Length: 369
Ligand code: MG
Ligand code: ZN
Image (cartoon, rainbow, N blue to C red; front, side, top):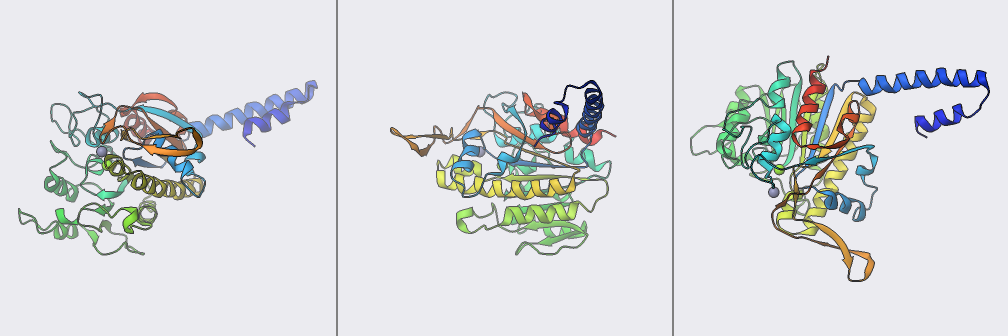
C-alpha cells in the first residue's frame, strides 16, 4: 500500500478532532515525503542499454521467464537523443551528452562541436573525492564508456582512447579491449603503465576477491563474448564487484554499467541476439536495484543513448497472441528513449527532456551539499 492510500484510510473519518489529528499526520507525512524528495544520493549508478528503445524493453517483458526488473521503477521520463548536427545520433555523441552535458557531432568522444575537450562527470566528481567505475560488455575503449573518461576527435581512435583510460580518474573498469593495451604499434605497454599507476590488472577471469587497489579488468581482446557465446553472468557479477569496491569510498561513487551489445543485436537485425542481451541487462538492473534498496543512498538511472534497428513487436498475421520481432533498419533511429529512475532524486527524472539533462541532473545531485 502506498503512503497516499494509507493516508486516505487514516483521513476517512469526518469528526472534527479526528480531522485535526489527520491534518497533523498528513502535514507530518508530507514533510517526510518532501525530506525524502530533497534527499541527495551519495551514489549514482547509470545503466545504459545501448540501442535500447521501448520495443527492446518490452521484449524483456514478453520473452523473459522472470518478471522484468523494468517493472520495479515508479519514475519514468523520455529522453530526446539527437546529436548537435544530426537527428539520429551515434553512441559517441549520445554518451558525450550523458558524460559531459553537451550535444556534439556524431563520433566525438568528450569533445564539443569545435573539438574542444569538455570536463566529464568522472573528472568533475574526482575533484571532490567521489570514486568512479565502469562495467561494459563491449571493449572498455568503445564509444559509450570512452565518452566518460577520454577526449578524442573520433570514436575509432581506440589506441589514443586506451592511453586516456590509463591517465583517467577511474577507480574500477571491467570489460573487453585487452588488444588495445598490449602489443601496440607505438610499443607502449599500457598494462605495465596501469600497474605503475597502482591498478591491479586482471586479464583471465573475473576475480572473486580484489584488493583495495584500483582495478583494471580486461577479459577479451575486443568486445566481450555474446550471451549466446557463454558470456554467462559477467555483467551482473562485474557490476556487483564494482559496487562492492566503490562503496568503500566514504565520499560516494558513480558507476556506469552498459549493456553494450543490445545495439549490436539491433545492427545485425538479429532478434534473438538482441533479446538475449536485454534479458542479461534486465538481470543486472535487478541486482543493482536490490543493492540500492538496501543501501538507501543510491540513485539508479536506466536509459539508452538511442534506439537501434527500428525494432518492433507486431502480430503474426491475424494471430494477436503471437509476437513477431522485426526491424526497419540496420542503423539507429530518432525515436525518444525511456529514462527510469529509482532512489533519492528520482523525481527529477520524470518528463520529456534532452539527453544532456541526464548529465545536468547527475552533476546537480553530486554537487548538492
Ligand atoms: Mg555502446
Ligand atoms: Zn549502434
